[in-house]
Image 1: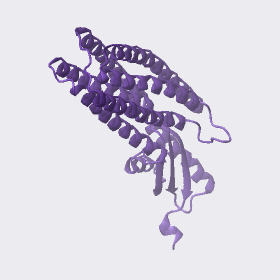
Image 2: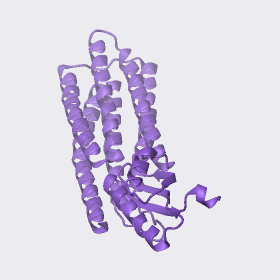
Image 3: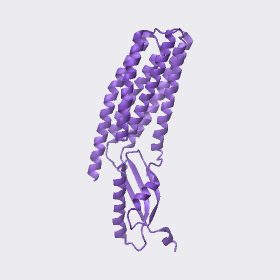
Image 4: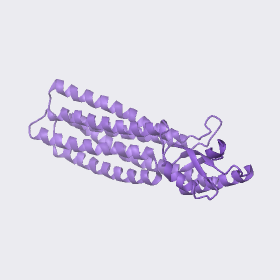
Length: 299
């Protein structure tokens, strides 16, 4: 069973890496197109959106590094393994989002100061619509893969790209406004983009902090229901779970009648553990503490 689980982890991480590489290439194309055209026309909204897309690419690289580190087996310094490196990589996306916010706001206020108007052509709309279509494809592909592989990194990256979709829509709206004679809406769109990016960053920070702070992952009653399917078990308590959604560590105290021999209680604890691992395949390891029922202890 352990060998099978290890193989599943390797296969999963390889799949996550392949997806990140594909998305990275698409994001580089999108970011390059926006930045080149944005600087060529002087549109702050397109430049801002280009930097947002560029942070997608940097996030993908960060994710690849984190995924490579997370696949390393447990060692003396990391007895629980290295899986949380992937979570740290997801947290790194938050940092790059903050950098994007700073750059977007800087560019917007610079345009407010100069008051110049960008050049808007049919090509401007063509570039934005084409990159918007690519981003929609990436969001759908990466979100589906993230749910299937239970990867908070892919889900965080998909959420990041989803914010790209929203900001691209804001850019298109601003280009229409500029074309109609309202150039002030170009830097305003940049501020709107900054707000979108900041919101996405806060959501990612919230989700990754839950993993890093060991927030409860599994429902206690569902665990208790599985434990109580073993007839010899009297009850259980002190149920704790932590870790990423696909790499959970579980420990709990299980009660056996005080007359149960140590050998038998130990054997039955493995039965409990096997049933828990079967019911919750995302559990990496479960530690069962053997105890007599509290009412028998205090007699």
